[in-house]
Length: 180
Image (cartoon, rainbow, N blue to C red; front, side, top):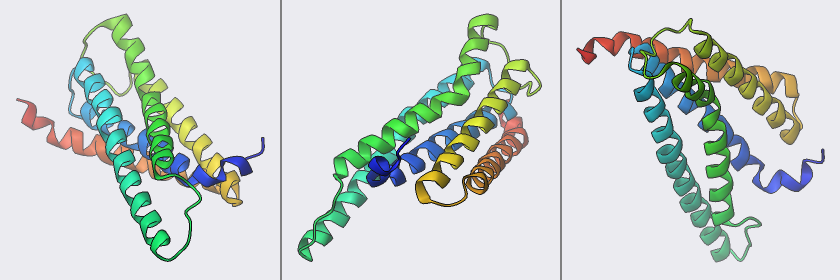
């Protein structure tokens, strides 16, 4: 697979993919830690995918447009479109953000609106596994795109993403007292 043709948007792809996966996973973990209902956890995950995905895309568009304006004043041309940058970051965010939600959708379909606070439930375990694999894969791809060691990148992204999820789970468990 030749990744050179994707290089102009590789930063947007990596940023959107990692951010979408990690933030959605962290939101879900916080909600699970707070022992919210499965339906509430899914709603929070979907809201995160859409709202945070749009926010990061809008921010990318505005920053890329500002960069293009500065370059234009200097008589230079930006090689990538701010709009395309925003689209790439939104799509990569949204697609990767849906990954941790898949087992929860399946659990809701099979079990209904149960309490989602059981982190040993097989669906939650599957969510952790597929999210870790997706983080590893995105990190590996990041290494390929940047020319760095893919294994090192994969481990780094997986550890950072996992750390964010554990922090969210801890905060959710700590703040669950506010539910009552």
